[in-house]
Length: 374
Image 1 (tube, rainbow, N blue to C red):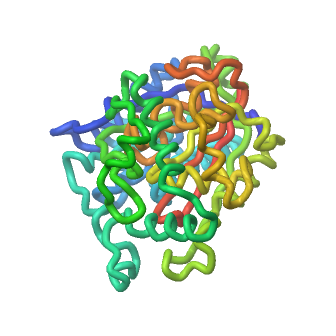
Image 2 (tube, rainbow, N blue to C red):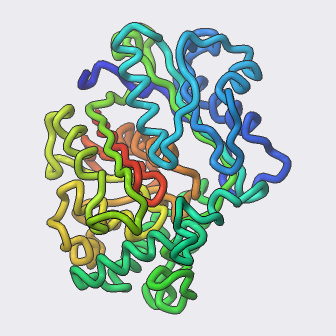
């Protein structure tokens, strides 16, 4: 399936606090923009893949959205792998298009936890309350502690990731948080759950994003301006709660990336730019290791010295990621990957031909990977 399906259009809303906006309204705005970007009429869409809002789960949510759009898709529905859902839905859409189940697919997500409910992020996960863990940061903090204890990873190394993402976000006019961060400021930020500081943790954001997919053949016939081919994708899943895992420093990102690289016929050395899920800084560090950009335990040294900033060896999260652009779960990273391949990013990596995007859900329970090219 390498390159047979393209991302033909992208769209998103504003990011941040959007009072009075429901998720259906937000989804429709992002989808309209993505369809306009692709030059596609709404009635051409016959596949609709939607992530259910995290902050308020609803049965048959995709049908509710389709009804609001006056759309009757042939295939689609709601997907839930937490933050890994967006790329997983793109993979499902690619396979559906290749199998002839649909011709034009929309993948979308919207949520409003900043002005709605944050309960999904504040509650205990699984049996975490038995261990006194509440809220999403607790499990990630335990993973970060283990990585530090096992490999000597330092707080300053996590801080280098926050500094890079905030630097890139400061140059992005659409970013929710446009304040650059120094390592000294990072060190002064308060602890949330040790060792994670405030600036290790992603934003909480309202907003929506959408992408339009179709076959490369259809895109050529329709004269889509800048179709970006999907070269590879993959998934990986961990079925253990954090406290029960035999290994806290390896994740399903490894099998997910291996699947995507094999499909694309590429290696980590072929990647020019990366958009890595940064719900917490430790997630980026471990994803770099599990994707093969560096060895296990070497992620801390890899991110030092500006290596993941624009101009570095592997620029990461060039629009700011979840730490600066928006805390939305993942599709905005795909959109920035598309912008990089189009040559349209505000922090463009010159000559970039291959980009990789990661999504991750739960407490490193689920993972999905996408490789894009020119």
